[in-house]
Length: 419
Image (cartoon, rainbow, N blue to C red; front, side, top):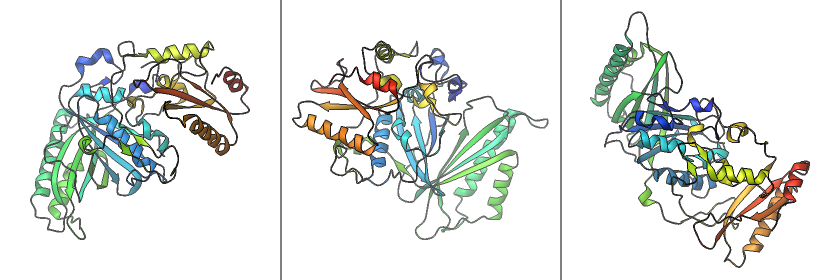
């Protein structure tokens, strides 16, 4: 996607060696199930569990959007036990095509302003979670990554990978045997696969997933001699190991999501944010050419803004796809904007409004005054979107431009605003 991301960003993520941007290699994507593995780290003040927090609302809306992507099957998430701000997400896709649609979509874009650590982890493995993999009270995850050298003087790469798989199965048998005692967490499910490489590497990463059921009371992780031996054998040929243990595992169920969720936000109580929000729906936008990799409406609005016919481009001109977010980097202004575009010196707040509401003008005025007072008296201008791009007949789009007083270019641009 030349318009959205730089050449460095285009190198990842990949599936079967095919980058998410390579639309011409569509037939090379596997028809088998794919599991996305995502890790996010939020700011300390973000809470996605408490229903009275704005983070919870944005999190649920993100999961609702992802669940409408064609080929979506199920999604699980859990907080990391030793990292209160960390969250891991597992998304099961029907095939490689569904995985690609996810990378092209907005994905977890709503959560980006709430992230503490960038870049985030966005990788996948060709794996189908079994039927007994389920969320519930006391269900926790343990994720294991082993770095295995592809080639050496002693071992063939294929034989080494096969050996690791066999040793993993042996470890699973020991854990399921019940010899570890009733205080040891019960293993409900153990699966494995190999993470897809985003860039060429001399190592392959083995991905093991253990689903535990923690017993009532205090759990004890007993390291018996037999268990220690299995773990030692499994890790003896690895160049590195990393593990993640989570808190309770949750599953998002679109059927239990209310059509209109009344969001009661503690911080913004009594303001415009305490309103009904409908879950978003993913769809292939007809204004986006997947073959040419170009947002047609976005390009047109950028050209109109450059010629002075618009006060600013449409918001769809600058949306960032999920595939541009990975461990190899995070989109910057230079990655998202066209190469010839000037770095914007203003913030634009877009609103979908029902103009049949009699108090709309007063509400808009109060919002602008609140922004003006809270942000140190910035220069504000606003206007109505002229083109009819909203599906509802009485709904319009309004843009509020928030500029810096020291920026003369913003003042000149704002002079074209007509309310």
